[in-house]
Image 1 (spheres, rainbow, N blue to C red):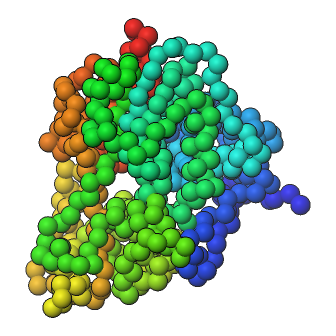
Image 2: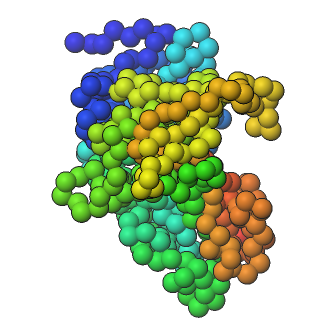
Image 3: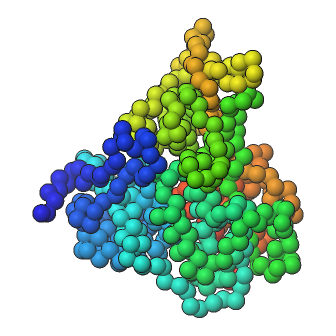
Length: 465
């Protein structure tokens, strides 16, 4: 039976029931069926000047792949996406489409935008189910490029360079490739075996070699990669893995975690599974401080581990930086939000364990440097929230190890590597950088966009252009 399509509204996508999914780590969104995807594809206006493409950091030919889905040519849709993206199944799940491609969709002016992200996910999942892989480059340039970091930026850059014919080796500090895709984003948003591992295998199928447990700056320096191993260019995509804290009283109490550590234990080290000996503290009541996607991931993970969870954020819901979908899912699952509220002290018991958090109510004043209204404390409005675990999800900064062991790299006060926005070129000839290590913590798709630009920049550099 054909699906009736309301051209002003998205074809609904199936999801796990909130009450059920709050107790498991299975993927929340079930994705489109073939029939649903083809129906949604009919909503695309096939604009001659597609604003959606302008909103995509990796510049996918969005109308092109959607037209293929509409015609039932799903392999063709995957091929079109693959011209620009090495991680389509990832992007279809975790990109903030509402502020990027879908935010520019002309259909969204009078109705709902085309569900571009869900269609990208469908094409990628269909290709994986049917054993379709990216086409491997046959012509080799005979030049070696090193990529530091196997996260989204490094994988994207490596994939693009391999397609150009370069011999690419990725050096990854952890025991598993994927970066934030494996240690940061939870299984219920981004399945590791079904999605991440397969996308990484696709990059390797292009001829990319990945060496894990290899810490650049310790195992070997950037200078040694170039001088001793003969790499003619290096792309630094080491991310931003150092967590930030508030430096308030009680922050050193037992039961206070960075979201980075908490999610790494849960995701990379599988602490949520009974068959893994990697324990994680599960508070009866957990407070998560922050309002971004990482805060939502930490909160929803703690909930699934059996805790009651409250998110504390100093601005209003309108200013929450997390994706609308993630906030919606968190609320559906029963997570509480204490908005316009900011921590001032973490309370400890006699043994140094967390027993609560003291917060103060806020109101929004004039806009700050970020353009958002600055939160201001309301005197006398302090109160306490009972909890036995606190997760700080306040952002991360780059690790200074690589800049500190590499000659000639210019860095900012925040330890970010200074690089050209369009090419990724740094102050050191032959060394490029992009993603979170250059910009500070941002989104997966922005890191991928930086990887694409750097690959083009490296190609120009090595080609003498």
